[in-house]
Image (cartoon, rainbow, N blue to C red; front, side, top):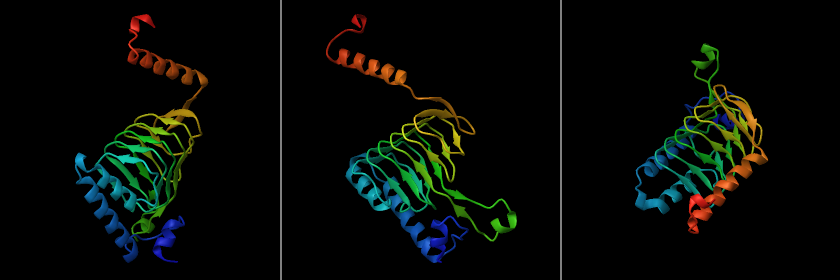
Length: 210
């Protein structure tokens, strides 16, 4: 097996490998070009992102600056948005579903190092995949650790450190991140009412008449 094959299979590998270093060089070149773009160059930004990632939806938007290990191991669905300072260490596969939102400074880490110092100092490392379901919103300064799956429709509160799987359709937060409560029909009704009020104001109805 090549070091890249070791890496993608979740086994111990060394990143000091010609093929992996070339892949990393490509990623750093593309992210440098992306991070140096201006707001007048949106189509070029999208072009660079589509070249960087393993696959994306048609509509994707990331606010610079952005960093990743390889990019080619990250697969992103339609309607993705990431705010400033997103980092994705994709030594293993990262799968992000459709309509996902990342607040500023969200970090996705698939990379890990052995607890044993002697093995760590060889140096050998490993990576476990991260999967994020459709319609997930991740709050600012959140870290998602190797091997984690976040279920569809869930919301992760700001400042969380996600060390274990989070089920679908819940609000979760904390360090370590834990489920706080399910997302219910009452949540939908609350936000539908907020949407209705907005539409009334846009139609010319004063808030006093709600």
